[in-house]
Image: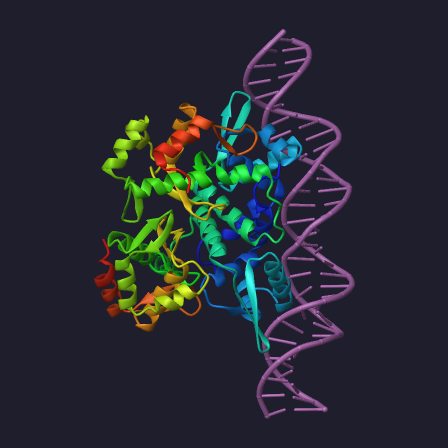
Length: 228
Length: 228
DNA sequence: GGAATGGTTCGATTAAGCTCGAACTATGAA
DNA sequence: TTCATAGTTCGAGCTTAATCGAACCATTCC
């Protein structure tokens, strides 16, 4: 009867509104303190503390103590991926189609998905990596082709440092708004970080929206191809 | 505060053990009756009925009346994808690594993921489709190349009939055991169905295990490349 | 028509767990 | 030391919802 992993346990963890809000907030990739997450979830600090303890014990988030603050972040790409998949179901089967406000439109255009770029621009970048043959699918896993390595280095990313980490370099993540893949993994993270360094874009403080500057978007189009 | 879809709602739906068991059972792709699902979940028919009504209302499953039976199946690939993603988290972060019994090993080798082939053999097939350039990534979406179409037809699949349906032909789905993609969508379904027709494999009645015959596995290796 | 089977609705019970006030620990600043 | 801030633990209160017995529809078979 009990085949496969225990899915109910973690689904129940995500299933509480307060915890779901916390996790959604952590999709921004920023590490947040317990107090910030309490704010985000709309509960008191005591309540947030118990929730966070549960999420930690369940392996969904990872705490990091720093001074008298305690920062929390998602436990890994896997968790982010599951959250995106749930958003996909909620967006599709969501019986009440929530009116799409301007913020929603911005979210669909470019947002942060646990540290990497998602939304329309995220999938466009991923497509460009495929079209230019920068990414190769070797044994099912994504890997950078020599051309791809050249591009990434030219883009200003320290590839050696990325490889030194244990985290997988290239992963793909299915987008809830676009229903297509975008680039996750260490490289996805680095690409977004580099775009911020180049002042192409900056993250919106509160939300997960990524706002491109006018020049940034032009440079993006020049690099990865214009919008269809 | 409420950006993105309402994730807690459906996570809570999946978060109940009884319902999670039902959904896991439905990952076999077979439509099951209310009584069967009650058995699977280990609850009485009355309880199952309320659970099923909830899942239906939440858009996770789709009921179909047939005579005095009521068959349930998953609402779509999206739901299956979310369930697999949750299994990925549960398997990875699952604090107690459940001992891997023989059934688990069989599950990892070949199982059904809501009507298409998953596990080691599923990812191997997906890899082969990529290596032989049968699948192309066009605008992020997967599509069959001319060579791919030729193969699929030669394999004995009525491609025109598949395209007639509204469902997307090629999708990819991330595997919880292999952490790699396998082929989902209408084509994925058709491939598994054809393999069963060819007597390469048959589904285990109760579980989600797919058992290949000796000749079937040899034919599979000849078609898609042997195991590494 | 009657019997049997599959499924649902209703009500009461029970258990789980979310929530916050209050008191407590730990770190940092004055 | 003293105070302030961040976070945790404890103990109720309270809501939610899972569960099943019993009675009730619907369909099929005899």
